[in-house]
Amino acid sequence: MSTNPAISFKEVQTVEERQMLRGIAEPVWRICYAEILSPEQMVYMLDWMYSPETIIKEQAQGTKFFIIYSSYSATPIGLISIDTVPDAETGGVELHKLYTNASYWGKGIGQAALDFATEQAKLANASYIELRVNKCNTRAVTAYERNGFYKHHEHCLDIGNGFVMDDFIMRKNIQ
Image (cartoon, rainbow, N blue to C red; front, side, top):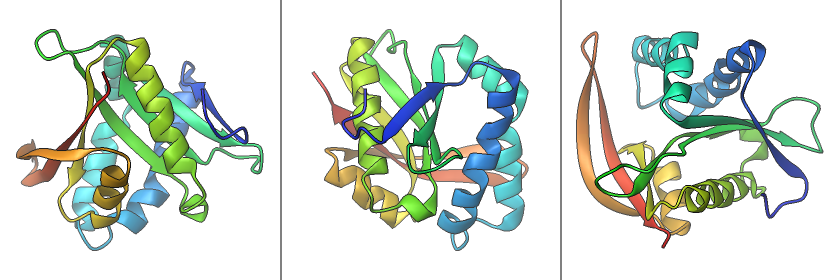
């Protein structure tokens, strides 16, 4: 449930909805990562993360994808994906993706999405939410810190094709 009545979250269930995800994420990536990632790495990661096979596999493993809608727009304004099955050892869930259309930045959409993610984590009986954020994405790091996340550790992951994800792993305790 969103604390903002103009915002709603629709769980992704159809082929058409899965196909919409990249179209929602890509314009945000072009802004957020323009000075962080090469165009080649951006395309590589978008192809990998938003392929139908990847999304279906993640859904089968308990990750839920949601399209964010606003009563002020006829088109989707963002997306979010979060685990719904806590890690057996740690009790945490991962917030995999949270992207909102740049024209909605500063209007409470990200806050509503983080509130929604927290509610999803509570429904899953998770003890914390964890996420990866590029170390150079200071706008996102600051937004997450404002919302109770802290830098738990750093992680550099080789994702193939000569590319890495050099991230902070941020965590928010919820119970």
